[in-house]
Length: 170
Image 1 (cartoon, rainbow, N blue to C red):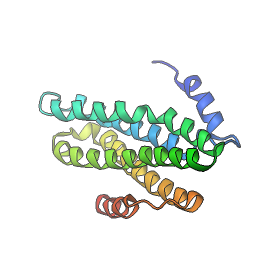
Image 2 (cartoon, rainbow, N blue to C red):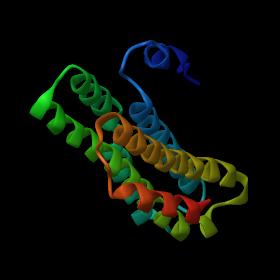
Image 3 (cartoon, rainbow, N blue to C red):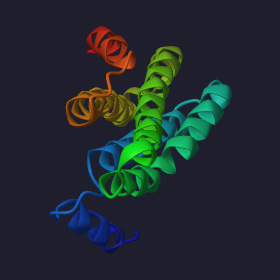
């Protein structure tokens, strides 16, 4: 078995530093991808043939959000160093990443409903932990949208939708 600690050390050190990025958006993107990987593992230990389409969809969603681990940090750092029209454009890009993560989390919940009954009992905890990671990602999307609203005066129509959806999936 590999030792992964050293691969994560710099990211975690940077996450804890007093600098704007990486921050919460990057962290919830990483949590999302971790969760999807756990769900993938549960599928592979259960019935891969039965859930092949769902597995492929999950892999596409993970690949899409994986890029946001770095994108979020880059955009937020640019937001903090810009002003005026340029800043407004960057805030919009940042919000787009947040909304994309929230919507992608909702897709995972739908896929999970299709898969859950076929997951073997000896791996169901990994499946459930993965699903909880998707819930944390949705909560992170809500919190980031609310923070942007306070910081930049940018209200999002997705905040209430995501809140209602999170209550539904708790």
